[in-house]
Image (cartoon, rainbow, N blue to C red; front, side, top):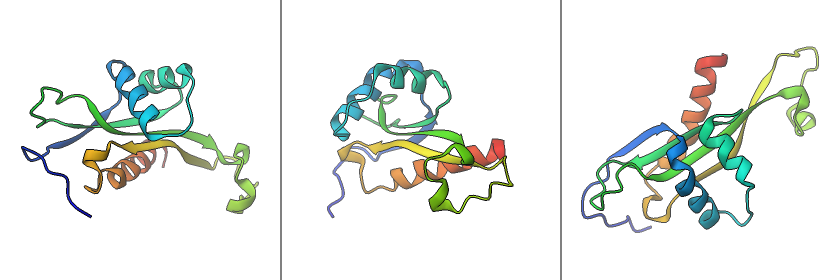
Length: 134
């Protein structure tokens, strides 16, 4: 794979998604995914309503959009016994407090792929959950 060419070296920064990211988040989802999400999904993401989310920006972008999302992860914490995949996980019903991190969406715009951003977003969502729930 050919590395993307940048006029300046990217400075990748991870941060929580905020209400000001709404339009960009909707736009990137529309470009990356074949399904359309309801507006309520995006409002829940940017306002932190039962959805954990992290965004990625390139704070070294020369085009003045240094705080615009270039990637994101959205996740929800679910009670294991209420999950659709309980049977696949071999869930122990005697442990009623088990929870899962369910990745809802994860994406990185084309120009920033193959830089490890998606992996870091995935790990960040797991670590964020463990910080507050483990």
